[in-house]
Image 1 (cartoon, helix red, strand yellow):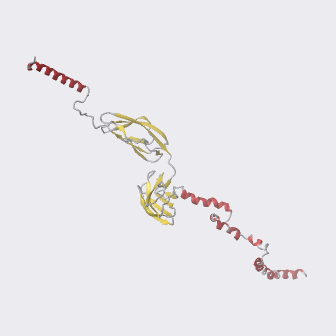
Image 2 (cartoon, rainbow, N blue to C red; image 1 turned 90 degrees about the horizontal axis):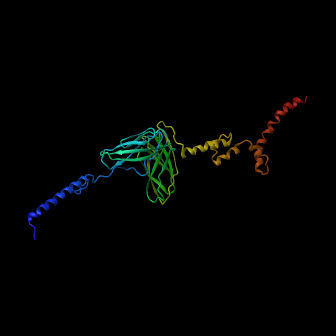
Amino acid sequence: MSSKPSDRRPARAALLTLALLGGAALSGCGQEITGTSTTSGRDALYFADSAAGLPPVYANETYTGNLTVLGGAGPYTLRVTNGTLPPGLKLSGQTLSGTPTKTGTYKFTVEATDSTLSTKVKEYTLNVNELPPLSLQPVLPSGQVRGETRIPVTITAPRGVRAVRLNWTLPAGATVTGVQPAETGGVLFWRVEGQTVTVDVGFKTIPRNGNRVALIAVKPARPVTLEAKMTYEARDGQGKLLTPAPAAAAPATAPATAPKDGTAPAAPQTTDPVRSTQPPASAPAAAPTAPTAPATPAVPTAPTSPVTPPPPTTPTPPTTPGTGGKP
């Protein structure tokens, strides 16, 4: 028996009411109804620093490092919640800067907060080291160089450096085709003598540790392996020598060998084996040894010339005292 349309209306109304009530309940629980979300397309708040963390810093050298925060909803607020920053450094925004005054290892925790009050924390370890010795080194490619290649020269520990002169000896078959400045400073002068290139670099401001100071273009005539045979000297703004490096080590050998020659006047030149044989030859002690070996006929002729002058002069003095002594 078929139902009348009037009987179906209350059932449809009841179903519609249940559907509306169910949708309201789901909406109250935070479930999506339309398939869109107010948080879609937004990443969670996080620190985007590298896994290695902050690079090491050096005592009494200015430092600037960035703590990178991404995701969430900016702007961000960062603060140190635990641990201690190195003395001399401060955190402002996402930048850690200052001049550390004390060496050591420092651990601290930074909390980041975005505009929705979401938070994220991360622990950092910062090493404050003593500045290493001043050094300039070419960054050499691995293996042989087969075509024209630009070799960067980096500087380490540049505190106070305003000018540098470097000398680099290349292997046979390699020539320098040009020198260019890199990152900081400028190439003032360069020249090539034989297989050695000399480069003078001046800096408008003191370069940072690890900066590239020059690019040297090397062209090999055949495949060659480059070596870091580089000497250098560095000076500050007043011209004071700062370097004690391979360049300073070479002159140091001359004074070291000088005392070994005693009182010989040519002491600074005694590093030359040819010159070292000359002092015994020029010493007067060699003259008496010559008469002791009159074996060869050529040797007696040499003493004869000194012996002949004495007889004429010898008779004259004895004659006068001899005549006066006999009466």
